[in-house]
Amino acid sequence: MLDDIINTEADMLTHSLASDGSELLQTLRDNAADVALVDNDLPLNKEFLLLKQIFSEVPVPVVLLVTRSMLSLQLVKQATELGVYAIILKPGRGQYINYRGIAPEVISKVRAVRQTLHWDTKTRLAQLQQELFAGPQLPFPHLQATAGTVVVIGASTGGTQALEIIVKGLSPALQASVLVVVHLPKSFTKTFAARLQELTQLKVAEGREGMTLKRGKIIVAPGGKNMVVVPVMGNTANLKIGFSSEPAGSFDQPNIDLVMQTVAQSSVKQVLGVILTGMGKDGTAGAAYIRRRGGLIVAQDEETSLIFGMAKSAIDSGLVGRILPLSAIPHYINRLAAQQPSVSATDTSV
Image 1 (cartoon, helix red, strand yellow):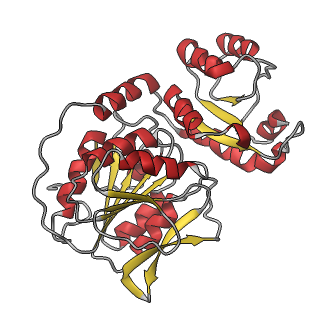
Image 2 (spheres, rainbow, N blue to C red):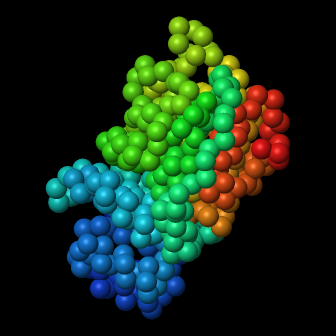
């Protein structure tokens, strides 16, 4: 069924099928492939043994299919650490899976992998671990309060590690509200928010209906639905969390574009959009809204990106004012939040 789905696309072709991990590994050894579509239930893949062998012997980008019952935050983190590009939930239960129901998502994510040029998992993960567990940090500079600064940070594959580094580097006196949007499945974002809380003195919470945006608070968009911001009692400078039932044009929920768009359409004084590592183009359309209202866009550079897809898309669009290594992004946020909102969208002094 999956090969039929792939072969309906003019720019895609199924090279071969494999019934177990050993057969797949040998096929990849013998033939060049752009993408491997792997079922996590494939025989001989216990404890990701197959994936470890693939990335060690024949590094090929992998899109992993997982049943909902097997999905966990630990699985997501382990898979992305190994180098899995994307995870797709298999529909239905039991012996018969309706793959036709996920055909558009399969095509979209396989195509996105092919469009992502940078893939150096081992090097990028080593850098992430080194930065995340680095020694004591320098004291944070004293910050003056600036009302109405909202920072939207978007990430996808590999984004949890990058976000941990950023949150750890934010000043405990940060005078901005931070919205974190990362492509994680439903129910996992609460655990991720708890993990971030361990790294910062700032308040961290998973977003819920009616939660207000406050200075010094980090709100993590819940997985499995599209978070937005809406005015409180009609006051577009005072915002709270809401959720949209409208399709976002993306298979990834929460959607980065929607959060950026709704923040940009408010009347808060200053908006910063940050686009991190990840596959696809989510965040580029939202960045356009932020720029049109005079906001700033920062993108993670290629060298420190686990997957240089989302950030590259934003950079190529011409919307990005600053391209920064991961370690420099929290310091940029700290300094921006301490300034009055008169910085131009292409300013290089911050």
